[in-house]
Length: 313
Image 1: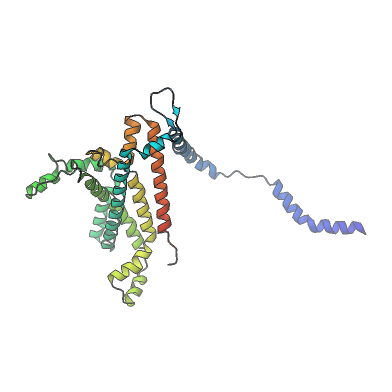
Image 2: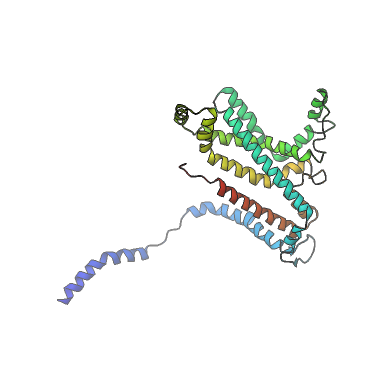
């Protein structure tokens, strides 16, 4: 009688055991998707990850180009930054530029997007005109504006002189050089912000505005309670992009002022370039790069924390 019971138990457990055995015997298939992403992963590892790790290692050494040995100094390069007045001046210039350009391009971009929201032939023409500077290289933009603002042959000074206005020294004045660079930075990027916010506005259903109008909301009420909540993702994106781009300021000041006059437009990246590729102090320049990286990471995380949104408001 014991034999049938064993057979019954075996018959009951057979399906589970069979499935487990089949799972164990099943060969793992190679996912061909890895072959498609392998070139990108290799490029990222060689040209991004490895240089980042190498710069971190260099920042811990007295690494000067041309020297046979590079003495390990620990965090001496970082502590040196604390007393480097030129670094703090460059950081101040970078923050002022970033805040001014970010606020300026978001506010002006929002105003232009609201004004050019309707699809007409002249609004399409103006959208193209405002967006066109964004696709140009920063170096090209800087060179063009440096020529336009030149006190000898610049067209801007010539027009002001023709109107009887004495033109200021745009890029030679210690008080006007940074505001001029900020104005050019806003002019360069406002078209991108406008296009992103315009795309966000066009996703708002028309019945939302109709419902707000029926509730007695005016132009400002519809903008505040309908448009702005719908634009929170786009505003977060444009503000974050503007902040990260501003903190990496280099091309514009390099081509317009070279950091002058008297370091009044020298950014952190400009100072990094000076110490690393002119004075060849790569260890100190790497420390500056890592400090800037931490600052960008912290500010970006703070913006995401403050500006995060929920799908249901």
